[in-house]
Length: 419
Ligand SMILES: Nc1nc2c(c(=O)[nH]1)N[C@H]1C(S)=C(S)[C@@H](COP(=O)(O)OP(=O)(O)OC[C@H]3O[C@@H](n4cnc5c(N)ncnc54)[C@H](O)[C@@H]3O)O[C@H]1N2
Ligand code: MOO
Image (tube, rainbow, N blue to C red; front, side, top):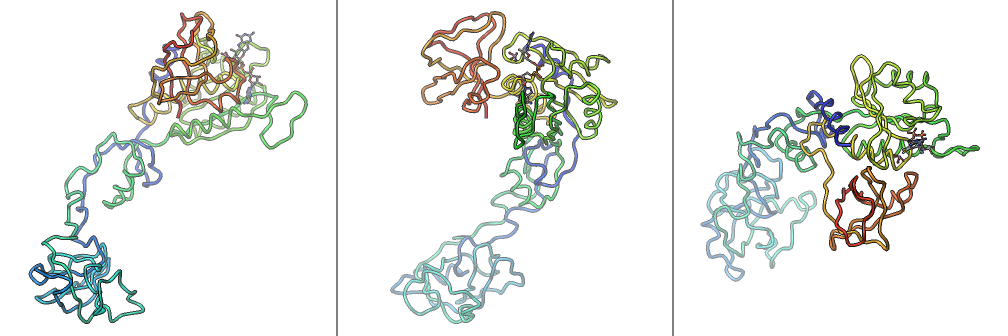
């Protein structure tokens, strides 16, 4: 297993960086240091709806002895051509609006009469229905220190500072920061394009009725979803029949849009194991038996003129999913250039009615539910690699080492936490 993973990781290297629109760069690794061109905020601005005032004018103001100021106009967010606030004057100002020259602080509207001549205001009336609010007088009931309710230019980040370092994975807050500092595009390693292709003449697309001996194709859906979850752009190709020529042609067609190809099924020792048949011929893909369960038969190689890596996973649904987690996910992460290739692993105590048995000489991956509060892990379903329902109710894999044939309840085990 470890050698197989090492061979895969030695072959895949991070994709060449490209310039992408912000939302297309979500989940990608930044390859440039991004510096701030214009400070955030770009100018001193108000953090409250209120009045921009001079500190001396409101010194000592109380509800009983308010400061009475002349309102010289409105400053809305986005305003330019700001009015100068002189002694004895105030400008009505909105949250995010630039602090006008002369003003040193903002008093929230709740600290004033809102220009009504009455008690403390609870808010402003819309300028469209009461334009007179931008004039007249306002009574201020409290004093304010210089800078009160003012968000200073550069208080978030200053021009020239590093906004995000190369190597950062772009999540929603990082994309928000890039947008805030005005970057429309960024240089990142792109999401790998992963073509997922299932094989099997028994497979029918979900939603279609089943004929005799047929089953629905679940692998291509589970693996396309898993590829997407790992950060890839997944292209699902519906089941290809067990015919080597059709499979070769389908793979050939897909090469154009693939950074990685994943197939399921047809890798074992049967007479219709088409992946093996189609891809062994020219020696491009190496088929191996790994000391693991599930996931024993595996193929790995590179196909086409561009030598696109191809991982051929076994067809049993649990085998293909577990193989994906252990081999394909790290490969996708390596193509993305992220440092953290693997799922987190923890030690957990087996909580089970009876001892678990495991095949000698094979590392077993059982499905389970992990309780982070108690540190216990409970198996879900049995070891059978056809048990899709149990897999859907699991959130981790229990790892039983190669040399262990029985695990007693209460024993500590390694657990792979699935997302
Ligand atoms: N004589 C031996 N037989 C088998 C061996 C072996 O060593 N000797 N290994 C077994 C193991 S372990 C596995 S795993 C499977 C792997 O078989 P294949 O990769 O060739 O897969 P298939 O035969 O095509 O299918 C296996 C099983 O999975 C179902 N399947 C396949 N694709 C899908 C899909 N897309 N969605 C849902 N289910 C799928 C298929 O119908 C079969 O039931 O080989 C064992 N045999
Ligand atoms: O290795 Mo198979 O994947 O045990 O069912």
